[in-house]
Image (cartoon, rainbow, N blue to C red; front, side):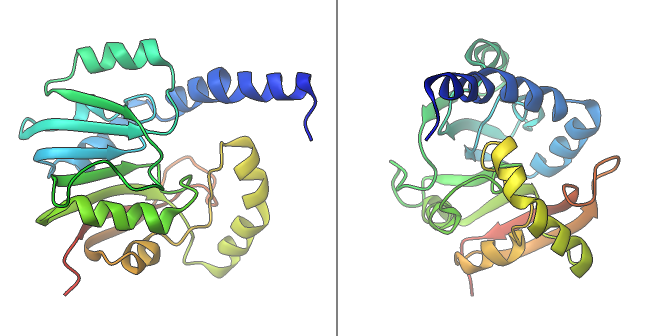
Length: 217
């Protein structure tokens, strides 16, 4: 059990230090271009799972009419509020756990988005099934994630370092097979690009980028 001082230190880390590091690490121009390309096909009513500090906002295309964003935590609220105020579309922000049932009707959204999020959702299968439920039949799930390597040697290193990664990075897993988990939730992959993130350690830089359909036929 953590002492009071340890709990306070962890609280400061998770509430202030780690979100600022994450915002800095994932907010450069290189990541921005990845976000822009990934989000290019989003349109209509969109839900973003794992909003974080709102780094996707400026990269959504004009065809997005309304954006609902959910996250279990409220990170850097003042900075996020400024980004929402500058967004080109109406943004509804909700503090929700993506692992539970979402408070939306079936087929409520034309697209669902996750970027660097599926690594840290505790009950990922349940969350992806909810994504499938709230998408329209012709909607799409758009994702940009890091995960398990196809190289067995790298994957073994990911398994070894994963407990440490979860501790220092707010529950983030570096060894999840993203494509398999998406398909196991009943979504059909319609596009999948695999690549290595430049300048990143390979155990953390194995990327999955693509789209999936709620109709697994």
